[in-house]
Image (cartoon, rainbow, N blue to C red; front, side):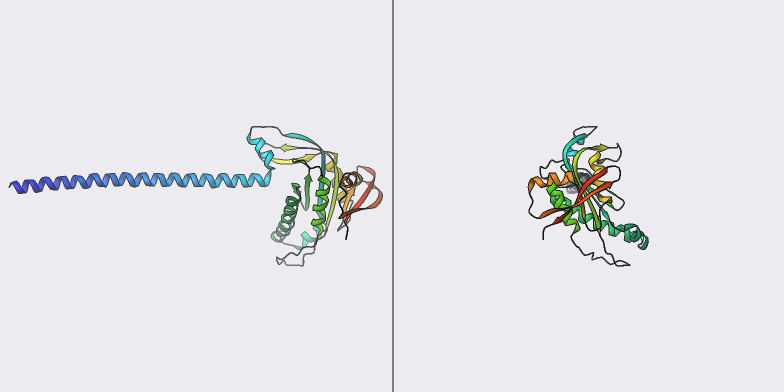
Length: 262
């Protein structure tokens, strides 16, 4: 009888032990799951933060992003010496009529991605694309004394021949018209919901006019640009006078074609 009571008591102890053990293990599993979920949450937030940083880096200059994060509400800076570049795809309207919407976007993506790489290489800041036009600046928001020289080299590289490897429904042969001008601009942020870093001023308008009054496959520049670029005596570029011409909204101006010395 006593042995049976002892076995029953031992059985109760063993059963209680397993109950407590199961509870402890269950609590540990829950804690591990919570820790795992928490770590996954942190990883997701880190990935999201990194993606946000990368998107911001592609939209705004890094130092402008930093100023916004520090609480600046209005960013408007005057830059006394910059060079503005406008590039345009020649005959784009006719080309767009022959391509599907998807192919048209692919062509623009190939061209503008190449221009982005060239600008980054030479220290230019891409400002925006307007249809098939591409706008960039050198000297803002980061100042460069040799901004005109850097812009010259970028423009020359943009005109270099490159093959489009992707197949299209029609042969794609591209030609560009580029305009350059040096002067003063105001640069800053506009908008509250969708930020955009932009430039304003006569220098922007003049650079645009240099492009629109230029010729296919050439870099059309103002006399002001020639004067600034000439300070550095770059041995691989030259300026051929085009003479005086009536520039829309500007009047008579001396202009030049920038070329690479062979």
